[in-house]
Image (cartoon, rainbow, N blue to C red; front, side):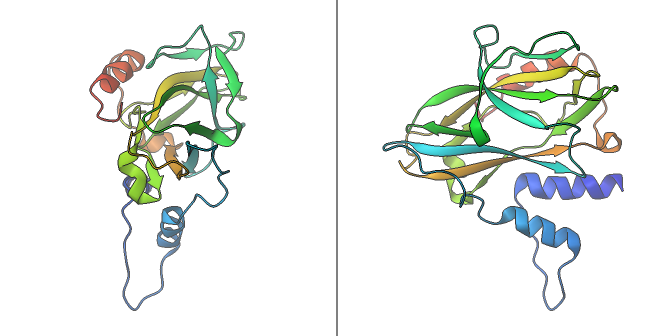
Length: 215
């Protein structure tokens, strides 16, 4: 089962589709093909001169407890890219306004900071792993530059606490005004498939992003 989850997640994260000849698709193939379909139909039209970029999340094999991962404007208290922290029950999450439906409007070449947040409503610690994002339509992928969330790290929200990380989202100068793009993150929620952790995951995550080509 561990290998199955990981294999499916890698296919989803990398956007690799398999085809079958003269045989019905399996349930896993159907789920994968549905994720590869165009996901931009319900993204609102951007203002003139801008593109609409939606940050989306899918969970494998099941959702995180509570509202799941949300996207916010950054706050002055946490406004540096790579800033990340796990917070206890009584600690406030330093965020600004909730980004409605995860949609940001960007001019060609524009970059913005976004705070990724997960609030844990349970009485146990919750961990998860984020795989590389995948764009729809696929042809716009070179125009979307997002800070990596690092599939090699396990992020953790303490019991009744929260986790957050500040990332940068940017579109290239060649992004066509009026374009709509959905950037989908696949989040692994089964601890059985998490990578082995060594050292301090917070520091390691920051160092990993410094070398990312997606900044």
